Amino acid sequence: MMKDADIENAVNALDSLEIEIPSWGFSDTGTRFGKYLQDAAAIDLNDKLSDAGQVNRYAGNCPLVAVHVLWDFDAATRPDEVARKAMENGVRIGSINPNLFQDQCYKYGSFGNPDPEVRQHALNHVLDSIELGKGVGSRVVTLWFADGTNYPGQDSIRERKHRFEEGLKAAHEKLAPDQILLVEYKPFEPAFYQTDIADWGMSYVLSRKAGPQARVLVDTGHHYLSQNIEQIVAFLLDEGMLGGFHFNDRRYADDDLTLGSIDPYQTFRIFSEILGYQYDTGTTPDIAYMIDQSHNLKPKVQAMIQTVLTAQELFAKAALVDRDALKKAQKQTNEIDAEEILRRAFFTDVTPALRVWRDKRKLPGDPLQAYRESGYEAEAARERSQRRKELGLTSGGSYA
Image (tube, rainbow, N blue to C red):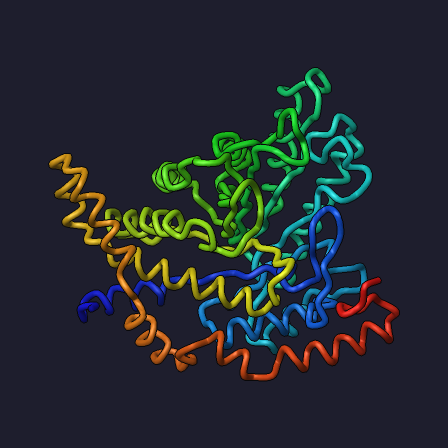
């Protein structure tokens, strides 16, 4: 049974949690072997913004939508119209994600490419994305690079580092005063000998050299198995360099599974480190909480609502950690009591706090069931199937 004080702590924590959902999470996706199609999947950016609005309507606290420049915009797209369309659906445009891996010219990298013309092409795209962010009212530009090499001796590792330093500095110079540049890392794939930004330390160094508005982006799937992600979070928090998260879960590598589906305790421990930092310092770190998941099999909107609800539950649990008791146990090097304090919070049923928080925000008590009963998904499937036929696109219900 939750105490009134625990409910209050959890509700206050949830009030501070704002989650960004990805536009690409609503499209037809699959694996490198092919796509798995769904009738209700989004066809264009308007569909994605509509779907995102449904997630925010039923789950709450997810008013931002991350957009991928290459997949969501073309030369005719007006940023002000995109911002207006987002507002019509009850959301805003969140992070801007340039695409630095899909063009054929990026075969040997983007910012790290030996060819200066390719590097300039990549930089121009990032600069255009920064301007696009200004146009849609976004303050976050996130950079993920597929750059690296597949064979020893293929290129100079140190020279590639220098090229990245140059490109990131040039991008940083064009940021608006309120914009931040988040630099993501990944240990492998698609480069299998060395990835240019392979871990948080490399991202940290490059962000520091880029300028004061650059920080590290942590994707929970971008780590080797058993890596202690909450330790990375603690270090980056202490250095003032934790800029954001891409939340997902994984069983083997970067699987983009639903948050908490494999290891909810890990997500809880990450949230606990963040809330512990707030408790110790009295300050709330400026962190962009972003979901980065691609639901190949699950219904898109339902999977995103499920993810947001899981994040809310685990964040509420992390707010229940008795910080004073934990500090006392730590000072006494009492390992058992210290661990039990965390476990007690993690295993607490926070349903009463979630109910109070949802009532306060006039949200349905069971957001997922309320969405299912709304009829939105069936109508979206009907309308989008018809539109696919008119556009000559493959239908989600076919075997083509």
